[in-house]
Length: 345
Image (cartoon, rainbow, N blue to C red):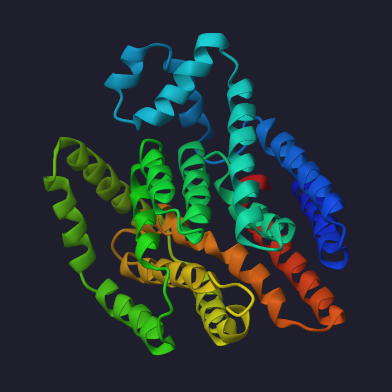
């Protein structure tokens, strides 16, 4: 646990420099050091993270193309395991390569999307640490986020290609294609209304029924649907949605909508990020009582807007002292995120 808190404090120190310094070269150097730090911390871990045994087993048993094509797991992910296995049977080497690619895509994306990539990286690391080990989904998220940076530049074909690529790592990443239609300003009332409607629909069996229809597309879809439905039954037996998490989402929603008039003047693509966050909350409510497994896996593609939106609030402050105070608030928030992660204790 200590190593993760130390990592956060180092990232915070770099974020502080990012805030007070105008030296672009030094900022880039510190961002590069952050990259190396996270690659080492995450890439050299052992027996740490969600689904550790399952992914280790996948790597150990994916030693031929036959293993790739006979497995129900996404082929892109299996091929990545197979290609590494050609050269070495070291799972540590695979994790290191994964971390190198993952954080490269994440940092490149943040550098293109926000003026505060260092701060955003600190928040992202803290908020996603609980998913460390979810190799398929994390790499898919990185590809999607990188595609989003192109969508902001109006390079729609690039966005589509990266989202399609992510599909071969994590099927449910196709949900990210929703961002293609979200780059617009939507009135506050409609955003709140979307969340309210999702809440009431989520109290019915409609989401479960609609999701079940997906299984009728083809055999692959049927297998994935059955797997998610079975997972939903298991998770609902022992999991409950956190009341604190619910309050946090709604509080952040109010703050992000309330401040957007000031932020969008400095960050033209703010509405795209905000709309993605709202879709994530609607997704949360839609499946909170029927498909909890979808909340944990599907909503992640929208919850990753959290770090970007939180760091964008800095645009609203004029005085340096206010920015500094807000930075320490975010440090506290990052520490809370890490302290809540069970497998790190």
